[in-house]
Length: 152
Image 1: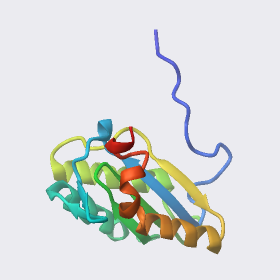
Image 2: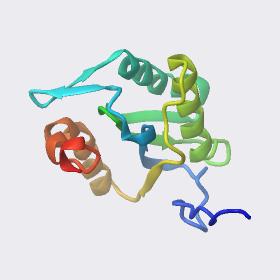
Image 3: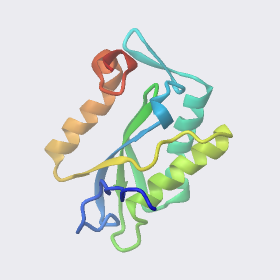
Image 4: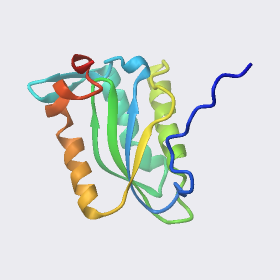
């Protein structure tokens, strides 16, 4: 007998290939802190963290209709803002993020990520500025971050 159906975190009627900005969060399996550590409010990347960072920075090489904005690797998750351009020619967001996660896992030679990811459609410049600030200040807030082992 199949288990309960997974609820999709995506907006039901939204076309995720629409040109615009998207905020993305992807977490490691079991929220394991493998990507580095926060020391003196700064992220210090591990070898795996550098692999993840490299794979993220390569996204626009593989998807010409995608541009990167603010991004941070945290000990057990990443936050980033992606821009999809060329409406009608951009890949859907789930394909971009899935490709990134697969590339990072292949390069690390291990399965890194939990299923799915969190996203938010960025609706205006004010929201983009606030999310950019959130991404950039994430290491400073690590001790109280819900993804931090200290806050569980």
